[in-house]
Image (cartoon, rainbow, N blue to C red; front, top):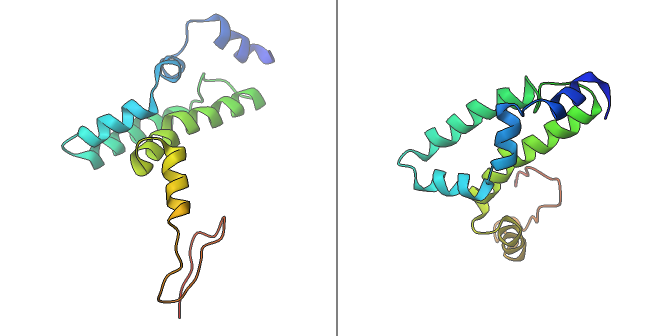
Length: 123
């Protein structure tokens, strides 16, 4: 454990974000979003709550490479994982595999997206 901040975070009662991190379920969050009458508002509220808490304060309010790792984990768990459940359905890994399996060439231009290629324009 490096630095005073890391040790303080380990010794002191966890911050609200640390507690959220420990008790958070991406699947349950996505389910709650799906059941909400205004899904967009629920997703935006979630992001408005967690993005500043993660990226401005850090998962435990500290700094250093250990905190950067915690920040990355917090982003993955609290921000990206619920979106994956929302977009890909039951199990994100299975949903992604199904998308890849059903990836067919377009009859219009025939372009097949490559890994890491976000956009393509047919002429």
